Image 1: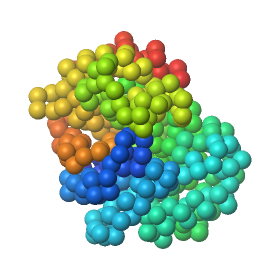
Image 2: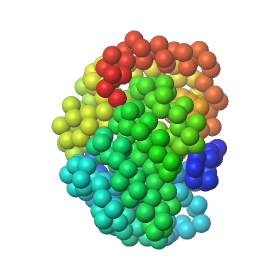
Image 3: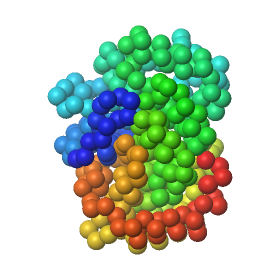
Length: 327
């Protein structure tokens, strides 16, 4: 699989990575052996980049990855984790003492001395403009608790604020055919600054797989049931902020753009990979088959200009009015 330079890190990671929220919580139950099989399948398919967080299953996702790293120490996996959601989302909680405690817990979960990358986990907007916060992150690097730091954001404005900081190595942002706004300013600014772009929620919580209908019912412990309107966390995290019924209709049209031999989900991932400035895209997977299919998207031929234009047209007609002004 293609490996892309990770901006200021001087490391390369697979252009298709693996998001591991599914292996922790909020997507229905995934057994431990099944989760480890997903990790193994992804690596065998060329994935070298795992993304996790300290709150996914209260650390379960990190611990599973830590076990995997012990069992396959030569796999060459780059692990990005996140911190900041173990306390209420208040700017005053983003302190050096808390950062030390959170990263110590993640280092223990993952079984490593130094975290490859730690990201602020969608903090309050004011955090991105706080010099004290970024000074604290620089201290974590100096103390070798982390090799580098980045941010996971909800909005383009937050991303641009983080990119302006000289120590920011990466920005993780929602980017998919139903969320095009980052292409206007964020991705170009990151390219100019040498900051890596990690594309998250790449399938709009599964909408872009084309597998759902308006009658689809998700499990009670699945965020696609309990967070459709932002009841538990930012609404943009679920279905990229697109209303479910409207998203299902748009997904039917998107599926028609898939080239022969490719699924709609693979087409969406290929579209993201093609955007200049994207370092890696991190689809999740609950089964080995999903992990293998996601990785295979990296091997698809580039989508033709006509398809790229059709994606933009679909967004303008069906999606833009719902999400563009908010995120």
